[in-house]
Image 1 (cartoon, rainbow, N blue to C red):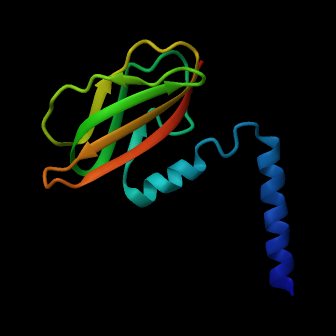
Image 2 (tube, helix red, strand yellow):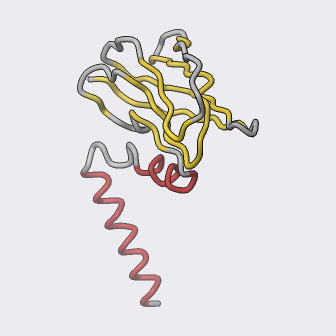
Length: 127
């Protein structure tokens, strides 16, 4: 009974704390997913950048080749970002075009030297 009350109180406190922070939850689930997969991006999922980021990069636990990056702005058509040929590396990236303030999704695909494929997407805001 005490365990149930303690768990209930802890959940209620966590919910109240999240409700007070307008940015709570923007990146925590993505960070947890990144930790599990070993993949991180810059900008990170849920990031709020000051100005247009110059690059989009993905860091893997092993060497990969970035194949595609597609940017989609809220209410706009997707834009394919040119990905130059490069050797496999643990961190791969591409220069981004100048981004106006708004909310963006960057979808990416990559391939390992052994042919295995990975993909993902992150959302971020440009202020």
